[in-house]
Image (cartoon, rainbow, N blue to C red; front, side, top):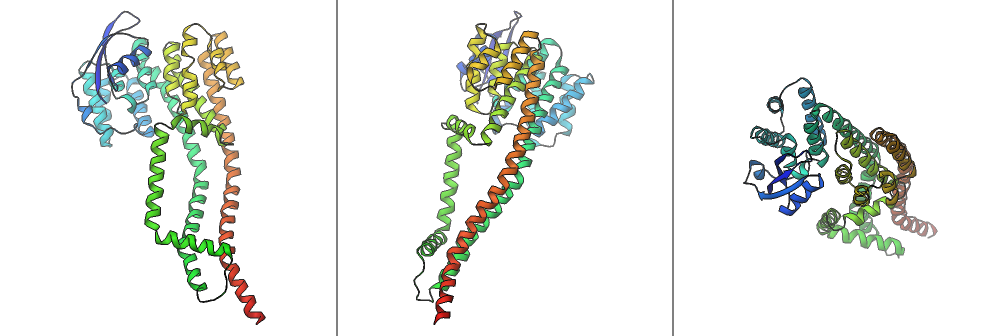
Length: 402
C-alpha cells in the first residue's frame, strides 16, 4: 500500500505533515479529516524500506501486547523514545517485527511523530493505537495513554483466549468423530462391499446406496479433497470481501452463538471508545475509530452511521439507541454517564458487563454443545454400522433357517 505525505492543520493551529498509508491520495486525506484535521495537500511519498516488506495481516496480538508492556515500562522509567526502541530491538527475536520496529525508529529519528510512524503502516496496527498515541503526544501523557491502551488490549486478548480455550474440547470431538466417519466410509465400507459380493443375496437399498457412495469416494478421493479445499478457499475469500456483511449478519442470527458474537462486538466498541475518550480524543473521531475496531461489519456500520447525528449535537445514548444493536441496559448506562460527566467510567462498566455476560453465555454454550456433538456423531456412526451389519444379520438368519 503506497505512503502519502499530507500537510495538515491541527485544531491548535499548528501546521504539520502526516505520513499515511492508503490506497490513493483521496483515501489518505479522508482518513486525516476523520481525525479532525484540516487537509491542505497530499503527495505520494518516496519508496521507503517498509514498502519492501512483505505485507501480511496485523501483527500478532500477543507480540504487540508484549511490545507495549515493555514500551510502557521504559517510558515510565523516563527513557527517550528512540533509546527505548534501541533497547527493545536488542531483545526482539521475531525478524518480521524487528524490521518493522527498526523502520519506525528510523522514521522517529528523521522527525516523524511516534503516532504517525505507526499510522504509516495502515491496517498492520489497529487505528485506535496510533490515535491514542497522538492524543498522548498532544497532552504530554504518553504513559497514561499506553496504560489505558494496554488495559483495553488485555481485556480483548483475554476474552479471545477464553473463547479459544472453551472451544478446544468441542473441536477435538468434531475432529475425531469426523475422522472416524471418514475412515469408515473410505476404508471399512469398501471391505464390507467386497465381503458381500461373495453372496448372491439382495442387499437392502440403504446399504447399496452407502456402498455406491463409499466406492465413488474412494475412487475419486484426490478429486474430493481438492474440491473441498477449493470450496473452503473460495468461501473464505467471499466472506473476506463481497460477502463479509452478509456473513456477519448471518452469524448474529445463529442461535446461542449469535448472542455471544453480538455482545463481543459491542464490548469492542465500548472499550475502544472509552480508551479513546479517556486519552483526550474528541467524541466524533473517537466514535469513527471505535466503530472501525468492531470486527462484525454489520454492527460496525450501524455504529458508524451515528457520527453525523452526534456531530449535529444529538446525545450519544440516543444515537446508539436508534441503531437497534445496543442493549437497553447499555444505553441507559451511557445515558447516565453523559448526564453526570462520567462517560468513560460508564463505558468501562458496560465493557465489564458484556465481558461477564459473554463468559457466562460461553460456558452455557459449551456445556450444551458437547452432548449435542456426541449424540449427533454417535447417531451417524450407528447409522453406518446399522447399514452394513443389517445384511450380515439377514444372511445369518437365512442360513440358520436353511
